[in-house]
Length: 89
Image (cartoon, rainbow, N blue to C red; front, side):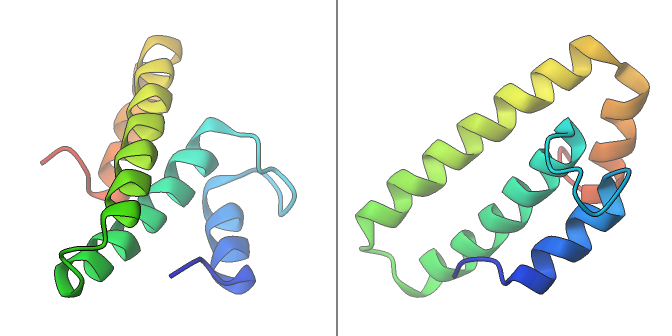
């Protein structure tokens, strides 16, 4: 269920300025979104996995907070991230 190091590196390269730029808000949001998608797929098969549901809730809250921060910081970057990750219908 966890991201492989190759997947993580690809996401960091796509959203960050360099391969080691893990602190950028866009990178953190992209990593959380990928985790959320994987956990959601897992929960479709394992409906009674309550500890994973709690983890999903925590990750979505963290992503929501980062998105709010980015929206307040720079609305253009916020809209780009939303568009690239295809979240917020």
